[in-house]
Length: 344
Image (cartoon, rainbow, N blue to C red; front, side, top):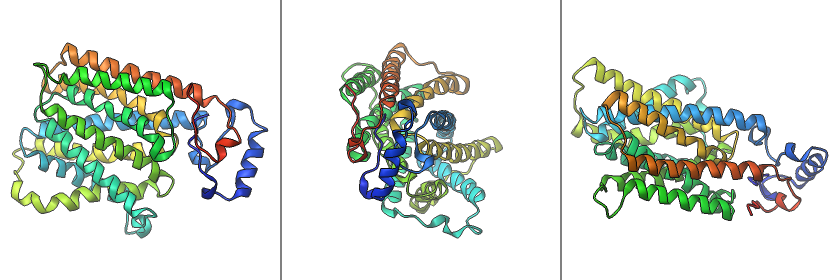
């Protein structure tokens, strides 16, 4: 069983004993780790999490598409601000902070600030890269983020990857090299912006997972958008370009809405399953990116991009395969105190 298990200091010893006793009466493949019911990665919970993750990916693809389109008419930083401002408007309308003032109360202010800053940095680098790269190229490079999540989940949140999954992660990064082609004629410096964006995105995903058990998703949503608006608004008067048509205004609205909905679904997904379970499903982004890139911009990815994306996707699917195998292993008494994954 995947060991996303809390240590004893997170729960009373008596509660741990009750969970351990109850697990002995349950079939091995039905055993659950200790923790709140909404955090237990059971079969039904995983299916719900996967559905949320797929919906989030579609929202993210719409953000990228609308952002790249808007970059033709305004500064990328204005596009980023539009994405955040629109997201904040939709979120505030959704959660109604006037009737729920405690929505701004967080038990982890430092973690919320870190997560929001990582998301902002990732978005800025992403929109900047989209000025030069095709949607499919940027999306393929961004696939390295789930690999980084699987690699970093162990030391940061205790979701350790074993040697087989580490090998799959290494193969996935080779796929990223095929896409970026450093040292070859097809290399574009803008690809480094996407790589840096993927690094920030990995940190954002992990902090989202850490916050899922501490703050409600509405609180996390509010802080996600507020950081971008607060930090970018002071510079907007110096770079603002007035939209020249209703279509541009409409795409600006779409960008903000897609951001709000996409991140809302991601937060809900993280409440139902650990990061390594969700990571492989983000690869459906390449499908949406390719379709939207062709439909909106008439662009088709080249052969090397498709080959590299295929390598990274294969790596992600193997990570999912290993997760399913490990998930069938029963929870041992030792695992109640030490979050370890046996992945040999």
